Image (cartoon, rainbow, N blue to C red; front, side):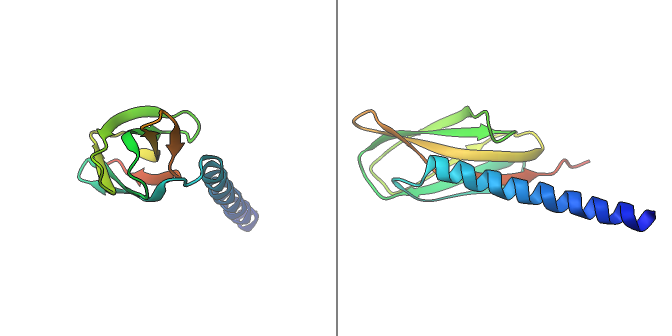
Length: 126
């Protein structure tokens, strides 16, 4: 019985991991890459740094969005575009858990594009 429970726990973990990967792929496919070359997120102390690069100069600014469930995104902050190709934003004092990030580029003509979604897991320290 103990062995059966162990197999069921592993199976549930595989299903959950598979669902998370598939959900991530769906988010990225829905949002596309457009003008974005890449986006990366990493932990820096108690904060999260999002860094991205763009392939076009016709951008007025960026809105950095975060989500704790992968569905509902809220604006974490914004960055003005300066004509460069690389940008970054530091999200201060995030909550522990799995956090999803994406960047919305606002073009000079008013249109918008979203970066692929990146995730980071923040562990709570005691």
